[in-house]
Length: 114
Length: 118
Image (tube, rainbow over all chains, first blue to last red; front, side, top):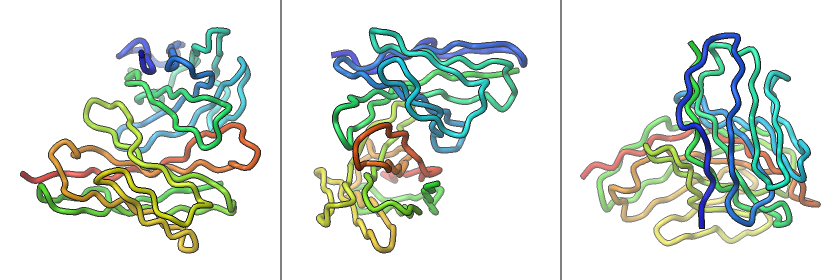
């Protein structure tokens, strides 16, 4: 049973560029959440997708957008990259129908903005 | 908005000893979940233990147990018989809005770096 997978593992971009990160949820899961983890900090919630719709959003600007596909996989897009966007981006999956559900995390994508 | 505070940036314990990691949170909700996650150097976040706010009994998972004090909004993690493999960052997390289900973005603390001395 494959867990949550993310691609790529590492990414280097330049200020002003755009980036797309990808996530495949754990088998049987239908909900995907994205988190940003700056160095030395705890993860911060970006948004959550279920049934291809954004269901909840954290305190992040519109430069951060996402998408969920019919197969439940998801993308995180960041436009007009800033140096402060350098972080580990974590994807987590869960099953919407289970209250108090555990979120299973992927290994993350390390984004460096130069 | 909910906040989660971990006041110990780093803790050190001898192998086989017991250590307690602290977490406090602020919320106006009465129904919620609390979690402890472990993040080893490999970066993969792993759930250690979960506590439902409506349950008075403290959760236990093998060597890991919590002390949940709802009135004090405190949720500490006790690790017994510490092992070298327990070395990692530990994050306390809050999930509110339980009533009626729905979206459940987690609010994390800043983490505690746990060092195990052999």
